[in-house]
Image (tube, rainbow, N blue to C red; front, side, top):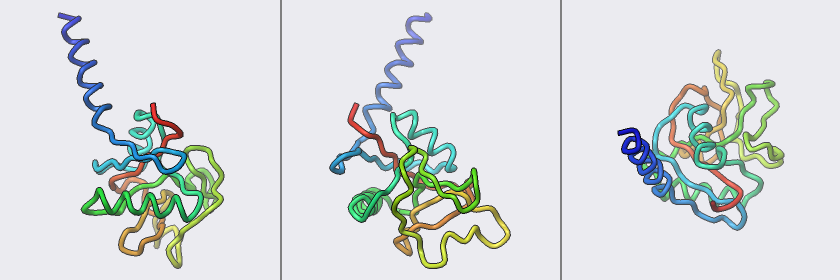
Length: 148
């Protein structure tokens, strides 16, 4: 009985892993996750897939990620891996890479009127980054260094 349960669990995990379609972007791989999650849950999900929420390091990354979002999504507002939850105004990527590029919407990040907005998402309507409440739920973009 235990062997059957373990086998079924292993098959379910393999099926979920196989369903993830990673796209190569000339270095790291990215994937779009349609499920709506909080920022923290989206990061945990990306970690379970072998990566982190996506970081951007230039116009090329921005265009590849933007195109993936618009190709895969009906509501393209999507979590990315930036956060200033440790120190207000000091944005960091969850993958530990340098925050060396930005694509903030005009007037952003603004930390919202009277609310803490510590998580970065791609604002599809404005085609740029915005800060938002981390408990909001959006789809997400995951990134990993190499295909595994």
